[in-house]
Image (cartoon, rainbow, N blue to C red; front, side, top):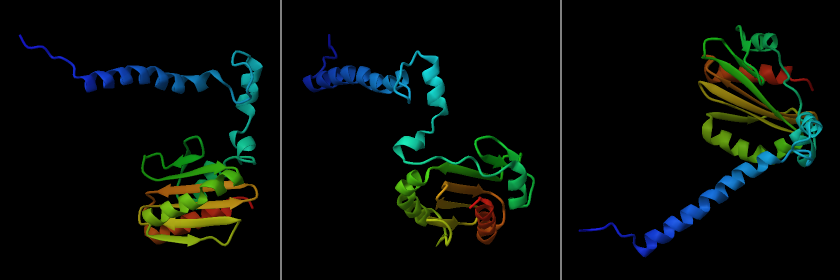
Length: 183
């Protein structure tokens, strides 16, 4: 009768896998017991402080600005009715066209700017530097676009998709959106 004996190499791999799984789970679950304020995770007042704190404020040296637009403003910018889908994301209600804004502190934006700019050059047909703010660019192609603006108040990344205006139309929408962000 033949048996499926484990080779020494296979046995070693199984032991390492058995040891690694608890370590991975511990690494994933350990941060859940800690709060941003560094206090007692069971203290409800510490949780309130952590929820109110801006994660960008301490480590990134600044304040994350709020969403700069309402659904009515976005509707005016893009020239069609848009609704607020939450988290500074606006959609046409049909699941087609969208405009979203991600905000961060100026310091956080500066840390990722070069990478974003490099990726935009690979993803979009046209990338141009902005003459507004401390740093910024606008990138477009036929069905989508993005713009990044870093100024003293924060970093704004505006993304659009599926408005049907082609490269030129997407550039116009992004420029109107950037112009509507308070200076």
